[in-house]
Image (tube, rainbow, N blue to C red; front, side):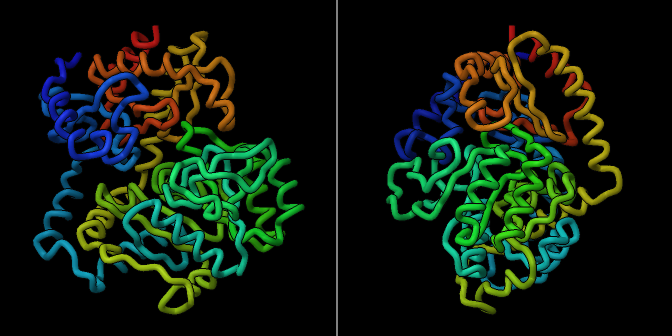
Length: 426
């Protein structure tokens, strides 16, 4: 099931480079870190991408986890088409905003009040502003290797072992923008408790990916995740779960349902829009009351609550709420992962998995935090990526990202993927 030479994609990339920085609208799509050039997509369906060279490719990236129902789900697409027929944007409220908000709250009861935005970056940025407005405090705590979007105050690298007020990790971000952002090591309960014992009364919010997905899939220890709830309650800080990826992926109610932890605020994205630009932030009613027009914290967006995205999101969540959906997906993932563990045994590869998300780290040692991920062999991963692509499989194009199993990855597809992984890692 190999693919042909990507002549048209190469030409399209060269054309794009003349007008778009780096030829792409999001850096990882350039595939520079894996030593090749981008695929340009013509169409998608189910578990497959078809590129402009007419290669039919099995997709394990699934728009970075969006398409849990598979690409171009007929009912979701039809809902969007019907919505476009009524107008693509209003700038005025429509009832579907409320319908989708009610469905999100059904899945996430902790989101007593919520507001829609257009991206995960907007959602996390807005949630943090609300938390600061609610508490009257400034300091934000995040964790090394957790990605919460590209807002200036979130592009921060870790300092030393415990934590410090850090410098930005992107050019173009003044030091003053990040001086109130503290970075702690992920999965380090002692460092977390120590920081709060010294600075807890100044902390507005702690934001965390409850399962890290942007340094590869890294699962939290039970005591670490519980400690985030304990220290924030003790010191009156707002606990924000960034479930942009894990929301509606690990369970209908996301990681907080799976692990039984109750945050004060939550952000969701990706799946919630059914493939269209949509995300949401929300939380306890008393916290969300500070948001304008009820309170003094301002946030707005012309396309927020876009009617096409709302219609696609409603249909997506309707399908996901069907009895047995997540149990079936979990069983399929269990079988796949069990066989994959046998394939990689003794090969110097670590398999991290949570639900239907997984990462293969080309690393001799267990991966529990950001520093562990950095010891992975990125050149070996690049060869693996190219080998898989040559066999017609598109895995997420970074050593530090997750792969996603969808409803449309059939046993036959997964059999072929496992066979290809066995060949590709040799």
